Image 1 (cartoon, rainbow, N blue to C red):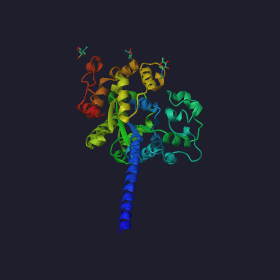
Image 2 (image 1 turned 90 degrees about the vertical axis):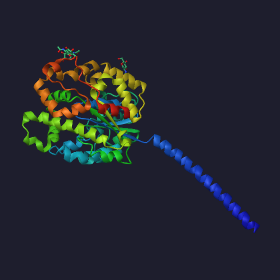
Image 3 (image 1 turned 135 degrees about the vertical axis):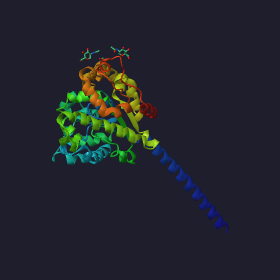
Image 4 (image 1 turned 135 degrees about the horizontal axis):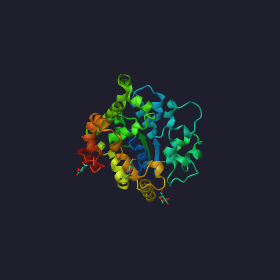
Length: 388
Ligand SMILES: *[C@@H]1O[C@H](CO)[C@@H](O)[C@H](O)[C@H]1NC(C)=O
Ligand SMILES: *[C@@H]1O[C@H](CO)[C@@H](O)[C@H](O)[C@H]1NC(C)=O
Ligand SMILES: *[C@@H]1O[C@H](CO)[C@@H](O)[C@H](O)[C@H]1NC(C)=O
């Protein structure tokens, strides 16, 4: 009897020890999970359109030592199907982005020639600091500002698999893409449990975009045809630039509106940025971007942003111009576009302009009067600003 009792006591004690041990074990795990949670990879999509400053915004992220950055990976999809339409290619683009976010670069197999590849097979690879610095390319240290021009001749011969390795060794993966014209295709990525997607939606005054596109018509030809899709043959050539802008403006409206219908927890993964606000306050807006995705605004990056936006150092490469010029360039449509064009564009893009806070001009005089500030705060921006 006594023996039995002692046995039961022993069993009881043993079970307590096991419970305590399990608890310690689990709390250890919980601690581990928490650590993993805070170091959970962050995936950032810079979603924009052509000629809207997205290369510069991409650089703002790509120069950060915690970031693996690629510019326009979906270029490979579009250039493989040049006679297709943006709409038909949405899903292929989405699935490519998902794979790249997860550092699975085999997804490029469908869009590149077979046989051995170099990292230089990747479109605009030299724009990525991660592919231009140690440990990928030992000519340059990882924690310094990277120069595409200096990187290109020295780092291009590395084998393609360094891309995957570089991606895996960074906590933040940032992709910049202009080839998305709706949020619908992206929605599954926002809710995908293996991703932690943050969207930076970059917009610019359509009148400035239009002027810039006029100067790059040849470069944008293939893209424009894919954007116009089936409508291409039905639209007179002189109307095509307006029609393309109409589609682009509508896509911004659709995206902004679609975001507003999402649950609040997903809305917090979206940030709307106007290029003009970035030009006017580069340090403050960069700080806002970094905060949104959980990056520290390191001292050398602050100096760099200050430098490039003041036309010192590498300004020519990143901004293509210095900040005063950028402000000037962002107004250039006001003296270089005739009012008839501006007026037609305002008709095609009116809803987007109202939504994003770009004030319309009603005459040639208003258009030319530079003391009229055409940037307003808009209700939608106020709301999104608070959430960012
Ligand atoms: C910023 O500009 C100064 C002066 O031109 C230069 O010495 C410095 O290296 C630059 N820093 C960065 C991070 O670009
Ligand atoms: C802005 O650019 C125009 C045309 O390129 C030029 O005439 C003008 O002087 C510039 N203004 C400033 C303030 O730089
Ligand atoms: C330009 O706009 C400002 C501000 O509305 C106005 O005071 C000024 O009279 C305008 N100038 C001309 C030449 O119309």
